[in-house]
Image (cartoon, rainbow, N blue to C red; front, side, top):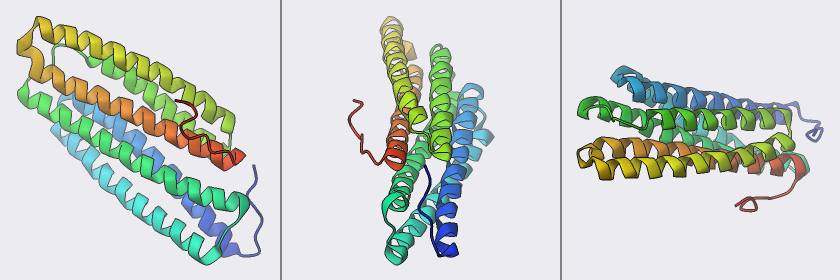
Length: 225
């Protein structure tokens, strides 16, 4: 895919700026998730605070990028592939911001578990699902960077495995809590962590749908459900 050519160098730079800022946001969100999972397993409150600090940077980039997208739409009135780029970026940054929020929730769960006592179960499931979600994010950002809709479609298929693993983990944790009611409070924190990871997978699917829209001009939102 090639973006439309322009006489205005400023226009070209604006488009490159929103593309670069989106990829920067994606990298920060991925770092948030990695650090949040480490905070969960170690109970490191300082690491949890670091995740929250990254979230502020993600929020800043979302506002800046969305503002630039609005200015491009108003001033440049882009058409064809340029318009799809601006619309896709505007939608993707919202999903990235929400993914950052979920990573912050995971870090907060880690701090809570450190205070209440570590959960006796569920960490292996969290690690496995987090790995799957991180792979999805890497592929989604790669698909965006290379304008590759096939990578985006393959990544959407990966979300089915994340959902299956999530459902399986919930069943195991529910069984454990019924057998040991004393563990309910701690295990519930793990369940909320798994829920955040599953939501991150859903947001990544949304990003992939926008990559398909950007590259192919086809709106496939909800068509994969």
